[in-house]
Image 1: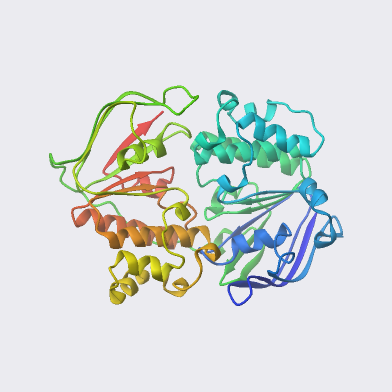
Image 2 (image 1 turned 90 degrees about the vertical axis):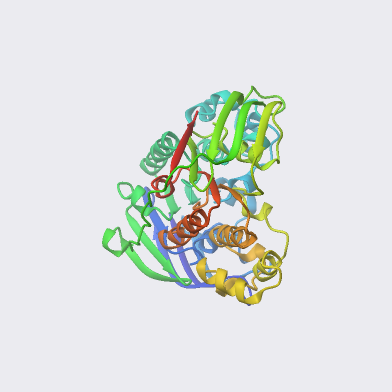
Length: 426
């Protein structure tokens, strides 16, 4: 059981959450939702004891089975609490999938076994390098570790963002089993309705405070406008011509064997399909970040690639500097674009303090200012609430209307509905 009374928590002189009281009983699921930047990840970090130990701000109390969290040694917290972050790549330390999994089990004195890897659909990835995993496969690896640990408290930050439909079904079953075995589960999600059959309680955050906390109630969940697809004339102009390409990562089986594809200009093309099918890899190949071992890729225009991890995109320390650089110093253009992507209030906040959703919107805003010909975007709406996803989708539609070409890798149905062409992989 987890109980929390949070007076304030966050970062000194920056964003804080305040006045939040929750209790999650054994065998109960609490779903936390709210707009991007409302404090959901800050809450997760407070509940794991990451805040309040290293100069960050925390006042209040958190109890696990009646014992104060901040008085526990780290080894005990590690055993009792499993936290899967929204950005899963930061949680891996092992060189291969099996080494990573065994390391986690060894910390608890458990015998290494591949049972949980197989349950999460990673049987064919046991010997793969973790650096070669897709984001969805990385999330499933963390889920396998959580399942093996059998922690009494699970805190899951946007657990569905990078997962395909089959993986989502598996994760839902894992959550159900953990709940039925008495775990206290806290799920942070911009798609709370996915969990409505499992959740007992709901917490809606807004600007760092609880807008609603209580029993599950669909009526308190805000719905937002979804942009509609515009019929566009498909012309014969080609933006990207992929001719008979082959590609493999070191130590892996070939990912592409003679792949050919034409991406037409001034359309939104989507790369969809299962985790590990090569969607992100294909974007990197088109961008020129990776090179095919055979075949050719011809680009008719200047591309820009926005990765799943937006931090890999940035070159400046703050949003304002990033946008000014892309806008060639035009302040009025920066302010106009910041309004479009709803990032005006965080222009001078260090990148490290931004939420994942804020970083993603900033990366998209920066690329939007760049005036590129071909936009290659990995999970453009990952971690975004409906309102901010709508802003992003409308901006992508505007790029296409201006004659730009947009290629996205996505699992998000909100994006798939707007595609002019879908290339399903795997």
